[in-house]
Image 1 (tube, rainbow, N blue to C red):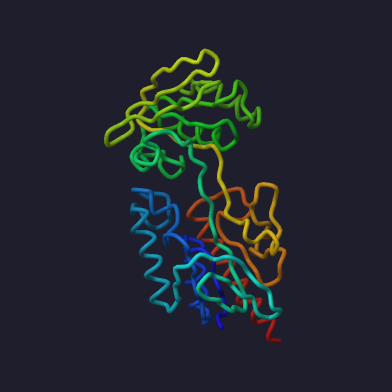
Image 2 (cartoon, rainbow, N blue to C red):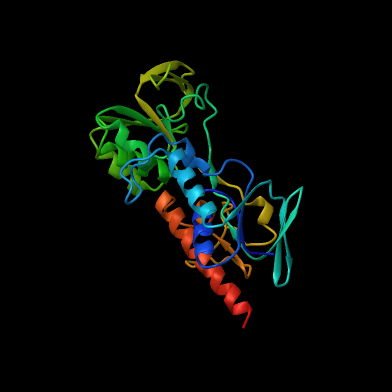
Length: 304
């Protein structure tokens, strides 16, 4: 019997394990892919308080090592569901079941990719999915942002403070984000809109060198020389397995309050998988701490 079962081994999940173990609880982290989550693909992290610079993989491994030294157990397995048996909640995997007094969902999100040639190969070498994480590395350079929503606007505005030129590429002839965001970008001298255009190919040997774009109105291809491309075409939560257990919003994110409590008593959500405005390393770590302490309080209340 575990006190806290944590589904997902990213920053939120591993922080939850650290706080759970320090509170004297028996925790297990169940991860179906790679411990560390998306941050492991970032070559350099410079926006985490107290750490001037660290690679994403080193940050993740340090976090995992810390959790394990405190006694957290780790399991590599694909979770297939959750079963509620009253005071006990059971995490189900193909090989084994894990009975827990409480559960923290920390499944994260995946960034929607363009599917353009060389996108995967050049990720971390000019292709990024987080402007606030990687934008500083492109100071004084020309970059492109791909997307037409509020996230793309925010990324372009952020990058315009550091980059000599920011191209905002959108496949439609009108943006779908808020007009206020468009107006702010229109006032920026170093921001240029490229509408009705798709990214056909990302070109570069060891780093991004240029984009091959396709003008949807004329059907013609043309080149755009940039040093980096920031993809902002949406995030995909991985919460389908739990839609019959906890309430999701229209986009598939888990509805959770500030104490990370979901609609289901004893089940909490932490990190990018839950409804929130800001999705950063710092907010994932904060959620992990809050969810673990809330789970500890839930367990204590159950024993009264």
